[in-house]
Image 1: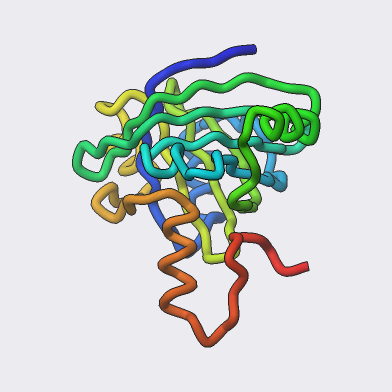
Image 2: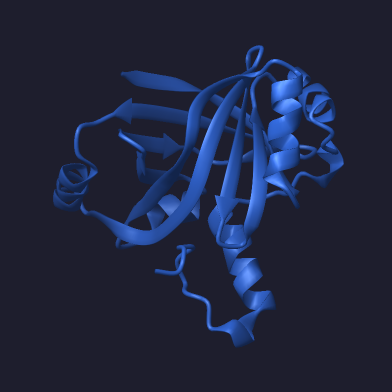
Length: 188
């Protein structure tokens, strides 16, 4: 499966995923993936060309799924994040890491979360539990994002800019006395 599109999303920090889950059920949303651990490895060349260009190459394991993703540079429309995204399923992210290694790409970061996915009409809503707190990502056509957020009792004005890794970096900076790991991973 190859999937290419323009990713368009809001990422909203929330104090309680259960309240959002209840709103999803109340509005007859369809759960498309139960809560499951997601492990993400970001790759880059030694010269950091992907990071410098604002792009990412990611290997993701989510439950039984293995996905390779390339995302192009980010553009913001207010709080809405947009970027080109290309995904392909693979059988083994370890073998893909070896293949990319042969092409000069190696692991530069790792992040984990527990993720649950729902559909509200044509909009995907994901509930993410991370080592720094909970977030809801609302992804779909730009004109539907704020309405979907309001339907779930979320304020789109609270959407944050940045990737999970940039948010984690800021989180670590604010809590430097806690000796948090560089990668956003759950304690073992």
